[in-house]
Image 1: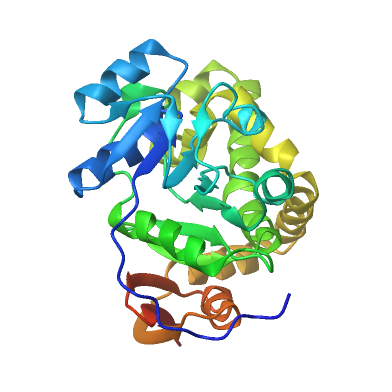
Image 2: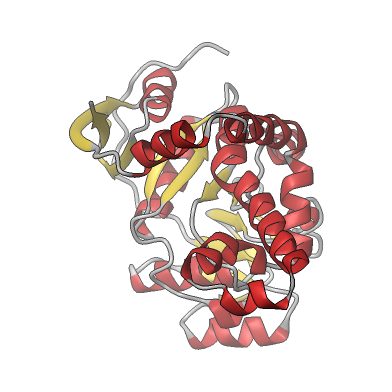
Amino acid sequence: MADAPAFPVPTMPAPPVGVVGLGQLGGSLAAALVAAGREVSGWDVDPAAREAAAARGVRITREFTGVVVLAVPLPAMTTALEGLAIDPAATVTDLGSVKVPVVETLGAAFGGRFVGGHPMCGTERSGHEATDPGLFAGARWALCLEPGTELPRWLRVAEIALAAGAEVVPVTAAEHDDAVAAISHVPHLLAAALAAAAADAGPLALALAAGSFRDGTRVIGSDPAFVTAMVEGNAAPTAAALARVRAQLDRPWPDLVAAGNAVARRAVDRRTVRVPLERAALLALGRAGGAVHRRRAAFVEGWLPDA
């Protein structure tokens, strides 16, 4: 499909948002949108999660219209809507940490109405008890813009991310999975390896563990089933990223330390840009390391890193 031309988009009332899955991510998104004045409904198989969301102003229902957000674990993506009534005109999105298999499966089911998404936030905690309306503030939210994605629907999902306090990074599913393998999925494996190696070193090593060990192993405190589904769902890009880490470890240690320090201490300035509502231009922004922070009628405002 050829890229659609830039076009003005008339101001329209914000559609209602339905969140399916009211754990940490889904519950936090619902709470953030309620605080932003959006109409939000939700559902979860857990009665306690439903009760907690209702107390925060979420309307509990099995019927959804507008934009429907799947905030469920990766293995449940294809069955999460069973037993629910979804408006045939609704836009469907998700919050999953792997995009290619999700976009392939749900894209086949919903066509251009599906927009894959992944907010880069969350903690090692899970469940509705970990709900935090401020979870998305300042976070990057990857939003897939595939050749078949309907741009007006992509913009509607982008508006939800912006309303929650995030910045939107336009990507393709494949680009997303390659990137997060390096900065999210491999770190989970490294955290697991570091924790297991420290345990092998004996009780004295664990007793002396302090800040650097705690920071290096924090993410592996996540639900093992969640981490396993994430890395296995993105196996090839994760294996490639892990190979790059192994290659770095083979460098002379002074060189490795200096190179890593330079990346960690880099200073990045930003310059504001306007981007037309056109697929190639939006993806170019994401590929250059930029993000969208505001929607306008005929364009979006964002920023690019300024070298």
